[in-house]
Image (cartoon, rainbow, N blue to C red):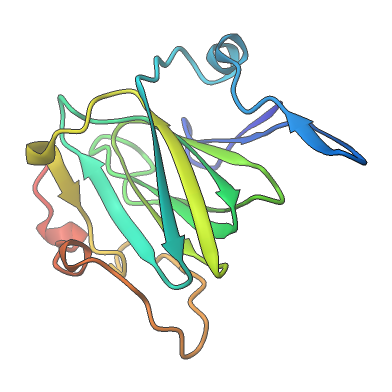
Length: 181
């Protein structure tokens, strides 16, 4: 696997080696020892999966400490624009974001450390998205930031005339200026 740290330290793009032949392909999707050597020791405790259709935008989500979660995300079917926003108050990259296209074709993964908001926009007709987390989900710790906050300035690659499909919770999420840390 190739590990590339993004412009925000701690956020990594992980590209597996894919072996193709007439039967299909094979790849190692995760290798703990290799991951720990490049990214740092992270103990994932749960795998999650979601299915979404074109135009679905999920995010920007995070959990407050002590339930903050690091995530290792990938797409096993379709394409998404995946986004991580640095919400670590003392970070020199506070409020900056990384946006990466993840797809079943490129098979790339994105590692997002604790302290980041996370979201994705489905670019294909359907996407199956899977991710590992290193902490339990706690509903009372759930938080969010408005996906279209101009202070963050994410280009979600929304096509002209595309109707976004967002949850009520995401539509009501606060802007960064009103976010409670």
